[in-house]
Image (cartoon, rainbow, N blue to C red; front, side, top):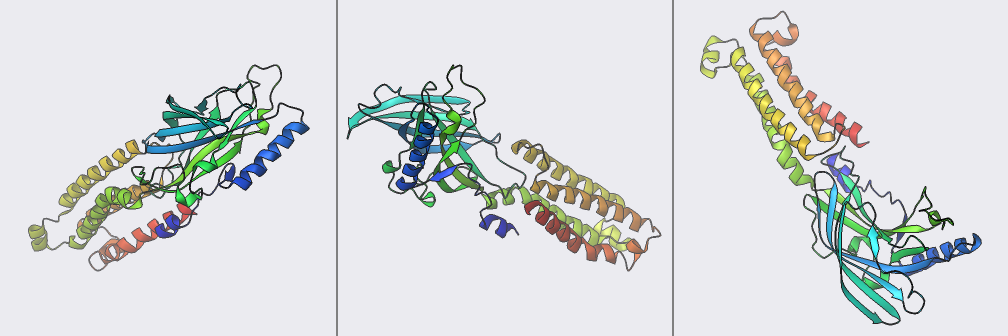
Length: 349
């Protein structure tokens, strides 16, 4: 189930129109130009814009921090009056510094060093099997005219999403694997006229987004979080196996009900602290997938403790007393794995 969940892409839900070739971009631009003409609004001005990310990190609060370069191309003569510059939508911090400007082949090319932090909406309900899309929305800073940014496809050797255009080769996102990167144009719905008496009908036109798809590093997450749970469940089963009424065995193994209760309490504290630590790392309001493993372990600790007390006290229970506690021993692993499998299916599908 884990392999299926990780192998098949469940996040191909692009919010806009994927643009990875010049023909598609030209077709989209022409359609918006015709729409502007039909509505008798100001003709759109398209500014080719490129991005190259050198480093990226994602903190526990789902804030994406990136640094790299953004450049724009302005057509000389036609776009001289257009303001130079851009902004990144939703950025909690943005630092940009122009470091290069030149003119060639009829264009003025301006490039900036950029560092920004942009909050992302990541669904952690399947942790540590998450797959999601991170996006940077790049907007022109001039809201008084129909100036829109489009991807500068000519600046990239390859624009196929699997070739990771716009990302430095070997770029890593700690804790995650980057599968694809791509450019998309998303239509916006603005609920304001930005203080203008004549709205520019900007809702007709797209915003330029650079997006990349990520998957959680499955191995690291499970090794760091499941190791303690696996060891505790094995110890719980061991306690079931050595539970006995034989005085000699109890004396040698020290497996009285009181001793077992002490061991179960110690294991509960270890798991509880591990659970709290994960909760601090993964900021989410709902119960996520891995938490069910902790809940089942708590439940198993409780049942083993109750079973030990009932068995040692000679409780009148066929379920506990049959052939020296045989039924709980036989049911421990099948019931545990059946519950885990059921939770996995319900969570994933």
